[in-house]
Length: 322
Image (cartoon, rainbow, N blue to C red):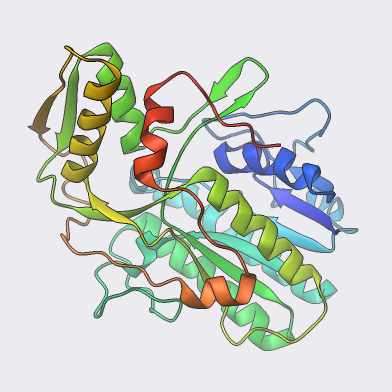
């Protein structure tokens, strides 16, 4: 087991990853400036509350055997609305951390997004698919990926990029349930409160969806992979995706079927509504991911499907991540 530093340790994924790593025997160094919209803190795992761009913060990482860099301004609209401020975190802080890790030969992994691929020239999307970003958030993540590529090439330091698809799921911290505002959680809330599922037009936009617990398994596998001495991998990018794609309308119909089974006599209405991100969001109807190299290299598979997870999302139960 390794000494693992996690930046963005109090965010949605970071807050779930901390107990997950601890339960598997890893020693933890945790950093978060608590500027994000979600704060997940575990009293038994204290977080250093400092800005990652400060030299003092980097010194707290000195004893790490691997750094997992999740700190970010996350979200398409957040970066579109504040491009300069988000760039300071998503690009400038990442550049500084890459240089710091490279100079000390500390392996590092970076949280990226499938948003970077834009509209790919060919499907399926593989770990070799080049970035073709079409909006500010994607451009910033693509620049972060390039920094990791350069860090690996210039010093031989083991570095990895985790391109995450659309993460769904929620988890419990004590009595609190932590969730992110993704489409599945939005549908669950709308089902309970309104009886109407609001599908952003046109509804045919297709994405890959992956359960949070499968995401955590990938991050832990990458931590072990990078902390184990050996050859520098031939590729830097790992596809953290299930390979299970669906359109937004598919998801709504799936949720409606499960809801009707759980709540007979209370059918849901599915309504197409204007898309608030229509000028930014990619609306392509085809999206397919190949994750075979990731499975081969990391030895980790996705264990949860959308179909098997929807009942839990519609109910009151939250996952345990420890």
